Each structure stands twice: as C-alpha cells, then as structure tokens.
Image 1 (cartoon, rainbow, N blue to C red):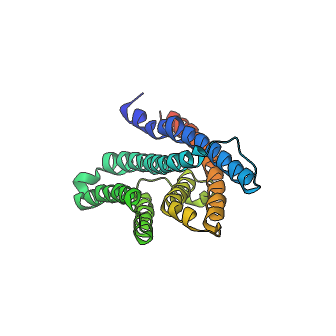
Image 2 (cartoon, rainbow, N blue to C red):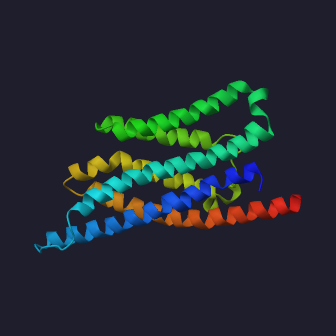
Image 3 (cartoon, rainbow, N blue to C red):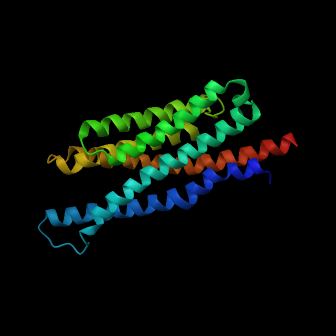
Length: 220
C-alpha cells in the first residue's frame, strides 16, 4: 500500500469508527426521548429517565461536528491528491492554493463559532457560513462529484447530509422555545431524511472504494 492509499482510507475509517456509531446512539436517544414525551403527555409516569433528552442533544451536537469534520477530511484528500500533488497547484497557482487553505480555515472557524452562538441571528449567520464554505470547497477542482448521477453521488449525498446536520445544530435552540412544536416536527422530518442519506453514504462509499481499487488495478 502506497502512502496516498493510506490517506485515502482516513475518510472511510473515520466514518465507520466515529460517525456511524454516533448516529446509532443519537437515533436511540431520539427514539427514547420521543417515547418518554408521548408517555408523559398522556399523564402516565414514564420509566425512561429524563436525561435521555439532554443526552440526545449533546450527542447530536457531537454528530454535527463529526459529520462536518469527516466531510472536510474527504474533500481535503481529493483536493490535495489531485490538485496539489498531481497537478502541482502550489507551484503553478499559489494564490489559488492559499485560497483553498483559507476556505478550509473559514469552514472550521464558522462551525466553531456556530457551536458558541446563542442568539438566533448569529446561529443563522454562522450556520449559513459553514454550509456555504462546505459547498465552495466541494466545487474545487479535484473533487469527484459524479454530477451525471447526482442522485447516487457520494459527494452530493454527503454534502446534503452535512448541511442538514449544520441546520439541526443551528436550530436546536428553537425547538425548546417553540411552544407550537413546529420546529420539533421540522427537526424530526429532516433528520429522518438525513438518516436515509447516511445509509446512502454507506452504500455509495463502499461502491466508490471498489471502483477506485478496480481502476487502479487496470492502470497497473
């Protein structure tokens, strides 16, 4: 295995070891939280401890960070291997290379500020900024997007899942402030859709790893 092959595995390994286990735990706590709310709304005493709600929120915040982080790692590998190493971007166009590095810094900074933001408008600003920088980075040369099959593209599904996680983090405060439960229903619907996207990521990611190995074998 060459060094570049090892770095190619960092993104899927992080997804399997970090992201997907957190998804399972978050889904479990979400179900427990929902069941407890339904039980107590009927006037019954629930055997589910009230701490499940807080744990769901805490792990949901971790999930957003891990999903965005793994997304940035995958994009960084694609851009570095194709543009920086293969096409020698740093020597041919140092201005563009510096801008790409700044894009990554801006995405990480925006996410960090989103975690710290409490006022609604700041959460909207930093959430939008985080999503924007993810899209900008994803548009760089070297990222394989499979645009002709966007509905089955690992890139597009991954970006959509990351954007939904950022949206969930930016709006979590609204769930507890909204007495009409509108934000709660929006949160449930969008994250059920995000769960389907994560399943799609597991399938498309496995497909892409097989394709990379296949075409590298043909090249040899």
